[in-house]
Structure formats: C-alpha cells, structure tokens
Length: 252
Length: 252
DNA sequence: TGAGATAGATAGTCTGACAAGTAGTCGCTG
DNA sequence: CAGCGACTACTTGTCAGACTATCTATCTCA
Image (cartoon, rainbow over all chains, first blue to last red; front, side, top):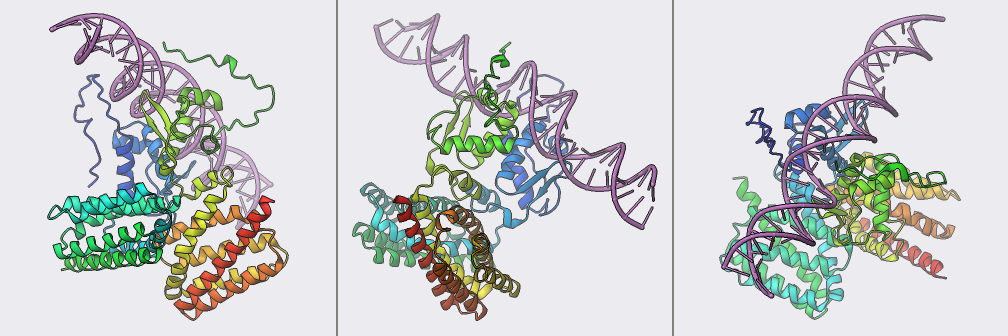
C-alpha cells in the first residue's frame, strides 16, 4: 500500500542533477486515492502539510496546491491550527468527472453505479426529447456517424464502446442545456468504468443496443420527441439489463 | 537577475482599495468574476502570474493557489510558456454550487434559469418518488417542520424562502442518491438567486405553493410514490409560473 | 472551581530563486 | 532560397526558508 509516486528519491546521491518531474497532479491523485481508499476516513485529519511533503518527497508548495484542488472539490477542509480534515461524503463533489475517475477504482461498490443509472433514468428521456427539437443538422450527422461506429463494430469491442460513449455525448450535447451537457460528461466517465464490467455482453445484445440507438437517431431526424423519449427508455432498459447480468456474473 | 517590475508604481490608486482582496478566497472569487464578466473571454490568456500578483497586491503564491482552484473547476488551463487561458464554457464545471454562485451575479440571463428549471423538471419527480419509498422517519419529520415554516411564514418572506429551500434540500436528501443530493445543493444555490426575482409573488400564490408542498409531505408520509410525483410536478408548475411572471415583470 | 491569560502548533502568506517546458526566432546547411 | 534544427526568451512549475495569523489546549490565578 501507499504506492505513492516516488521515483525521484532512489537517487539519493548528493548530486545536484535535480530532475524535477511535474508532480502536482500525481500528488493530488495520490491524496485523493488515500481518501477514497479509507486511509483517511471522513472526519479524520490528514498529516500536516510539512509531513505530507516529507512523505511524498515534494515541497510544501506542491502539497498545498494539491490540497487546494481537493478542497475545491469538497473532499477536504483546511483550517489554521486544526489542520486539514476529510469532509463528509455528502460534501464530496461526486458530480465531477475527475472526482469520479479518482473514486471509481476504489469504490467498485454497485451503489454508485445504481445511483448513476437512476440519474440516467431521470434525465436521458428528457434529454432525448430536447435533442429531438434542438439538435442541429451537424449534431444529427455526428450522431449518425457514431451510430454507424456501433453498428459496424463487429467484434471490435473497443470501437463499439467508444462509439457508444461518443453517441451519448452527442445526444447530451444536442440538448443544448449546459447542465445536461455537464452531466453527460459525468456519465461518460462512468460509462468508461462500467465498460469493463459490461464488455462481455454477447453480440446479440450488442445488436439490440445498436438497434435501439438507431431508433433514437431516426427519432431525432424526424424531430419526433415522443419517439426519442421511447428510444431513450429502451436504451436504458437494455443498459440496466446488461448491468444486472454483469453484476450477477461478478458475484459468482 | 530577472528583476520583476518595480512595485514603486503600484500604489497608483488615490482612493481606498476598492477591490483589492488580500486573501486567497477573495482573489479566487475576483478572478472568477473577471472571467464571468467577460473581462477575460473564453480562449483569451490571463495576465502572467506575476502581473496578477501585482494587480491584486498579493504574492504569486496566492495567485497560483487561486488559479489552481479555478483550474480544478474547469475555468482555466495553465501551461508552461503559453500562460493561463480561459477554457471554453463547455468545460466550466457549472454543476458546482460555488461556480454557480460566482456565475449568477453576472449572468442573470434567463437561459441559465431555464436550464435549471429543465433540470428540475427532469429529476424532481423521480426524486420525489424515491423519497416516498426511502425517506426515514426523521427526514419526514424534518420535512414537516420545513413545511410548517412555509405555511406559517405569513408576510415573512425571508422565512418563507428559507423554509422553501430547506424543504427541497430535505427532499433531495431523502432520495438517498448521492448524485441527486449533490444536484440538490446546486438547486439550492440557484433558488437563492432566483429568490429575489420571485420574492414579489402574491400571498395567494405563496399559499398555493405551500399547499402543493403540503401534498408532497403527505405523499411521503403515505409512502405514495405516484402522489409524490404528482405533487412534485405541481410544485414545478407553480415555480415555472412564478418565474414567468417575474420575467415578464422584469422585461417591462 | 472556573474564567481568562498564555503558549504552541499549523495553515496562510511572502520572498527569492532556479528548473523545465515551449513558442518564436535565428542561423546553419542543402 | 528553402527547409530544418538549435537557440533564446518567457512563463509556469517547483523548491526553500521565513514570518504571520489564528486557533486549540493548557496553565495560571482569583
């Protein structure tokens, strides 16, 4: 454990070569990992900035900037004299693609994925409706291309997944609602991590999924909001089914 | 020696330091304001860290930490030699209560409020449903108390608004979905700013709103998901109507 | 015993310096 | 003259050390 990025200290020679890699993002990620892994539970205090600097082999400046980033995302709170404490989970800005990316490797618990699925259930039908009325010609063309990437992927799972994610990204963008667009990016990140879980779905199911996505493209082209909503719900049904299958598979 | 520009010419302001923050959060807020106000448009470069330090009368350390926070929220991107550039709006983490709070004073444009209303339309009915099945006794009791605050506010508009916001916060929390909870905080911030716009609604409409909220409380107590959804939609209808009225009033 | 004074620890800020990366320019070579 | 590589200057990235502000905990004194 504590697999912190320490690659610059094995050359403890007093030589002043001083290779200084760009380390701030790595330190940020390492600290976030330590929080998500439970090494620093909610409510507990982190070591002092000086000690953290020693532990990671970087200056206090880097530690401070990393903590500022974590504080900006609601993970920690720094106060003079009392130190830096880990915030309660309710304060974590889980609606942040970066936070989710840090979080996912640790919390593979299904709860988060269930929450994301609920969110998709809430907004994707409406997003599809809005996209049907607001999508530009260019967006519909892009969507068509992404769909062809799915339908023509064959056994190329990577291409299928990538096209799938691109597809959703375009639909969210076509809603022309900045909040939905942002949530779309979150969903993208989540899909990236659930990819491996559902990568084993059968070709038949992939064909089903591609067909449902094709229905959505058609609905957008026809500017048919109702059909778009139905297609979105169909897509979600399939996604939920695949996720359930993957979950069962995992628990065996 | 790379001597920086002399500070001898920086005390040029004859007046009291009108906007010269001294601490990091203020600098962060000031920089964010300058971005949202259009002083630094998307794609443009900010002054160098040194110049910003001179402008705000703080050290480069403070400037750097402030920029790190802004970068964490997707507002800017720093790269060596090229400087710090303002990101495109699509990258702004608008789903962040702090960003919204910085943003709202400038962009009172109705577009953002419309986007938020669309978001509420998407998720609040589902949130109400989930709350009906998942709310704890304590949460229902809290909700009851918030509702009494609304119904008994009389002419105390502040109390009414505060109770209204607390009400929604509790409902979002009762969904027991971390993503919805986070979005709930966003909505809270938005409500705070739309408060002034709708503070002029008539007592009759406030009574209507209180009644609709009461229906939601009752639905949760009865664990009636369908009734909860209907009540949530009713609340949204009223909110939309008030917002439309306020908008018309403003445009006259 | 309790309230106020005090000491100490830690985040916050400042200063100055150097390293590292990069865009634009200069110079070399063909 | 053209193309391309080296060079320079500039800006962010990192480091080091010091001092300040603020808060907690303890200690002292009435």
